[in-house]
Figure 1 (cartoon, rainbow, N blue to C red):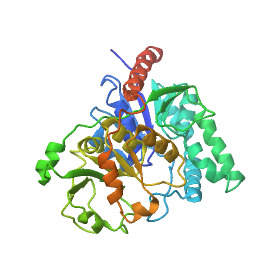
Figure 2 (figure 1 turned 180 degrees about the vertical axis):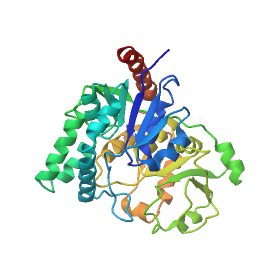
Figure 3 (figure 1 turned 60 degrees about the vertical axis):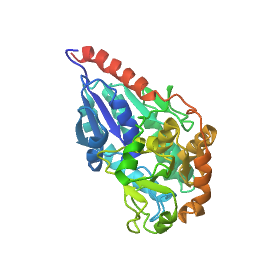
Length: 369
C-alpha cells in the first residue's frame, strides 16, 4: 500500500464500554491505515491502555450520553441528560463547518455513537458508519415525550443526523435502531479476554478452593454501599480495578488497569458482579462467566442486554434492594452453579467491521490521489 486514506473515529465520552467496543475494531485494522481518534481528552490515557496500534488523538465532544442522579449509577436523569445533550449539540453545530473541512480527504468515518459526525461526514462526501447497539435518540425519546416540544424536536434532529450514515454496523445485543440504515448486523463486537486466574491466585494467595468474583460497578457514586458486607463472604475473593470506598478488605483485591482488562478479569473469574453495560455483558457471554447485575431504570439499552443475558443462561438479575445493600449471598450461590452455553450471537463482529473499513480506506486512496 503506497497510500491509504485515513480512518477518522469519533467516540462518545459516555462510559468505557464504547471505547472498549471501538478498540476491538481498531486493533484489527492494519497499521498501514492511518487512524485519528476524536473524543473527550479525559479518555486519551484509557485508549493507551487498550489500543495496540498507533493512532493520533484530537479533542472533540459533540454528545453527552446519559446523566445519573447523584450517588445512584443505576438510574438515568432524563431531564438532566437531555438538557446537557441539547447544549453540547448546539455548540458543536456552530463548528460543523470546521469538522467538514477536517474530514475532507478521509477514507471513512467510524462513529460510536455521537450523531453529529455522521452529518459532517455526509457533507464532506466521506462514507460515515455508525457502530453501535443503540442511538442516543432511542435513549432520549421516552424522556423527551414527558418534557415538551423542544426536547422532542431535539430527538428528531438526532435521528436526522443518524440517518446520514452510509451504513449502520448493528452490534448485538441491540435495540431496534429504526428510522436509520441500511443496517448491517455484525454480531457482538468484543475483545475476548485471557484466562489468567492462576496469576490472580498466586498474586493474592487465593486458595484453589476459593471462588473468584470480578466486581465492577463503576468508580463514582458508590460511597454509600455497605462495602464491609463483602468482607464477610467466606471462600470468596473479589477482584476489581477500584478499592472499596469503605476501606480495605482482606478478600477484595485491586489490579492495575495498565496490566489487566475487564475482559481478562471476566475470563479469569468464576462469576462477575457488575452493571450490565454493553462491554460487561459481551465479556461475560464470550468468556462463559455467569453475571450478576442490577436493574437500570430510564436507560433503554438495559432491556436488550437483560434479554440477551437471560436467554444466554448465565444472567442473574438482582433487585435494586439486593444490589444497594450488597445482599449477594443467594445470587452468588445461584451463579456459581450455572453452566451457561455459548453466546447467543456471533462474536466476530470486530473482524468484520475492521475488514470492511480497511477495504474502503484502500479504495478511497485512489479517489483522493
